[in-house]
Each structure stands twice: as C-alpha cells, then as structure tokens.
Figure 1 (cartoon, rainbow, N blue to C red):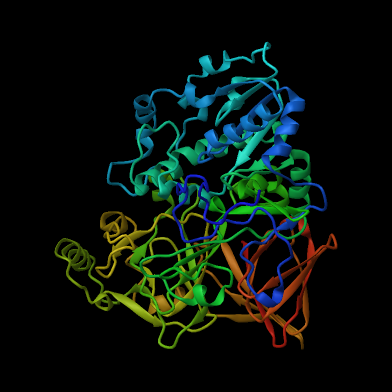
Figure 2 (figure 1 turned 180 degrees about the vertical axis):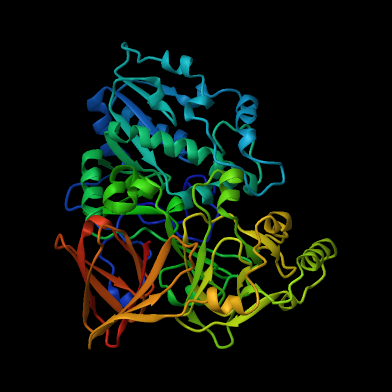
Length: 601
C-alpha cells in the first residue's frame, strides 16, 4: 500500500512522527522536472526490477529461507514489522517462532550506568563519543543460546543486535533515515536503546548522537558484507527492499559518478523565509525554515530508485563500502568519515544567529571524542540589503569585561550592545567569511548562508542569544565557559578583514570561463574555488573529492568520465567522488553559471 505522508497509523490515528515535514513517498510516478527547480527527493536510478515493495513480497522471500535474521537501526517500529509479517504468514497458514532481541537487553538501570560516562552532566548539551559496542547492552550469552526451533516451519530473530545471536541464516537489515528517527523521537513513539522511560527530546538526542548512533553505525559497518537484503523502514505500514548485491553495485556506480543526498529542513528560533518561498514541494504551513541539511552526512541518506520504487540508506553505507572511491588520496586520512558539510542558514526576514564560537581541535577531541573540529565558512548565496555578518572582535576587546557582560545578560536577562565587542560586516552576494575554530561570529538577519564547513555540526558554544526563546518557548542553552575556553581574542581589529574575509582572485581564465580562488584560512583543511562559465567547463578530480553547488544560474548538467549525466538546479548540492576522474559542467541557463567548489587541501 502507498505510505501516508503524515506517518500515522490510519486505523488508530496514533501520531508516530512530530514534524511539519512530509514523509518521503515510497514511490515516484515521474522524474523531477528541472523547470520546477530544487528537488527535495533526489534519487539515483538502479535500472529496472532492483527495488521491491511491500511486506507481501518480503514475506514471500522470507518463507523461502525458513530461518531469517532481521536486524536494523534504532527507531524502527519493530512490533509493527513483526505484525505485518505475522499477518501474512498466518494468511498462508504458516507457523513462525519469533525471538525478539529486546527480550535480551540488559536491565535499563545497568544500561544507564554503562552509558552515563558518555553523556556528561544532566544539564550538559554534549557528551563524548561512546567506546562501547552494541553487544555491551545485551545479555549476549543468553542471546546466542536462543536458537531456532526446528519443530516450527519458520524461525525469525528480530531487532537491533539480532546478528549477535550467531544464526547461520540470511540477514535482512532495516535502515531508517536520521531525520525520521528524530521526528519519531519528538512524537514519543520511539526511545533510546534499552531505556526504560521516555525523557525529553534534548536528552534523547544527546543519547542518540553520542551513544546509540555510534554503536549502531559501528555494528552496521561490521555487518555490511553479511547482509542479504537491505530494507527501508521509514514508512509505518510499508516497506521497500532490495538485495544487498544490487545495493553494492549501485554504491559502486555512484562512487564513480555523482552523489546527491536527500536534504531535509528544520525551522528554528532565528529562521527565515527564503527556503519556504523558493523551494517547492516543502510544507509551507510552518513559521520558518532555519536550516537545510544539504550535506550533513551523519544525518543525510542516499535514495535509490527502481521501477519508481524508492529506498533510502544512510550515507555511511557508501563510506563503509566505497571510501577509497569517494575520498581518493584523502581516504587514508579520513577513512569512512566524510569531512565536509554544506548546509543553509536562512535568516531572510528572520533573526540573527546567536553570538557563538566553535571548539579548537584539541578541545573537541579531548572533551567530545570527535576526530576533526567545527571549522566553518559562510558563503553568502543570497542576501537582503543591509544584511550583515558578525565576525571577529573589536580592536579594544577586553575579555574580562566581555565575559562579565555576557554573564550579567544571562543572569538578569539584560540586552547587550554586542557591537561594543564584536565587529559587524556588510554581507554581499558571493562573499566568503572565514570562521576557523575559536572565532567569535554570527550570521545577521537577511542572509541565505551556505555553510561550507567541516562535518561536525552540533558543537556551537552560544554566548549571547538576543534574549529570545526557542520555538517551544524555552531559552536556548548558553555556554559561556565552553566558549571562553576556546575563543581566540587575537582575531580582532584590522586583522579580521585581512585574514577572516576571503579575497577572491582569478587563477585561470579563457574567453568563456574563469576559475576564481576564494582562499580559506590556514587552519581550514579545505579550500574553495568558484567555476564561472558561459557554456561549459571541464575539470579533473585529481583523485580528490569535489563538493559543488550551482550558486548563480538556472540549472546545469554534469557528465562524468563513465558517461553518466546528471542535472542539477540552482542551490542543489552534489558531490563528484575522486574516482569519477574527469567531468564536464554544462550551463543550461541563459546567463553565466557560477558553481562553488570545495575540496580538501
């Protein structure tokens, strides 16, 4: 059956996801039209008869196997999966013995004690990356002793960690996009692994990010070559599935062609109207959109298509299987961690971001367990008149006085004239502002910012948030102490314009195209070029990954060395993996096209 876009159970009306965003359809009837602009459901075609749809077809395959392991991610509605399969087996008169891994979890109190060291204090925004394994949360000896019942026609072990039961049987893995997991979390329809009671969303997300996702991602990496069937569990009463061999062939093909993840969108306290007004097919019944997760790969997925059926897997599936093809000469450094992100910050007719900074490399490694830190840049994709960016300190900055003013503001809810301490710069279209770790900054209202940044994305130390509340009517956390452990007070005065605002220079040109270098800071491990062309331009990856976006123009096509052609509209992010080799960008609009290109140094 076709999924319903709200993500609720029709028979009960029980809300399973809390969001204004539509649930991705399980199938498409026609390919996206470039004339419609930005495509919110991009997919990579696998050809015909590669993706199957429905619990009926999956159940028929399971019957043939006799014994099956059904694994998967957190947030899957496991009882619903079991019910859908059981109903179809009952209809065929087939008996089944179910073993649920949830019955073999350690007591919630024990699991709580195990994960507590990775969650920081009760009120802390951040934890540190968990070093446990998924098996540490389970009574693995008991789980491995739960063997198939040979007196039953069919045996199924189901749930996260099912593979730890050690059954010699085909493995079905059900994946779930991170955005849908969070929408379910907010609705209270799922919980953290082994948790006894629901907590607030803030604590649940912290636990997911620092514990559950880490354990499950590592577990999936180990299982990848043992999976027989990959399934997509984002639709409550619908499932799409494919054979793993076809998925691996698709990933291999993608890693030599072009990658575009499925973006997702979120409102926020300072959010604006640019995304809402200019990206079609989004739900317009929202107060604003603050973020577009264009390429924040820990939370983005890749959508495959066959016969109109869609199936999404997490981005790390590609990196586990094809990191060398994606990153090329940099794979030895970053492994399966994709190091660059693109995302939009929309403050058009919105508000200022908080005054903030990000951790230095040693600080994020020692305190939060990350490998790289949150170095950023702001590329101004579009802006209103009088738009601004806050960046760097005033020449006469007094750190003690600044901290006192911030603490008084937090304690007494007093406004600060932040310009006494922080510089304000005019923002113009195509400007690039450089924000290496430790730099005080904020995007002012009236901007559509393309953040070209290192992948870490949640380590923002807010110092001043303009005394506003979030969309739930609560104050957002202020992190003055963390900030002052990282701020670089030498980034001040005239040095800011010299070192923290990129000064473009043409480095190659012909009559029909030019390449503009937008130098990044010495602490950035990536650099930025802008390709400007009237008709076409050809480049080579030189065994490195190219992350790109059309930042001026209507649409472009890209043809890679393998002969595949993809079309992209204005503001769509796409990645040319290292293994693609050479590629040609062709302008499909009337004026000169401009494409931003980020690459690893």
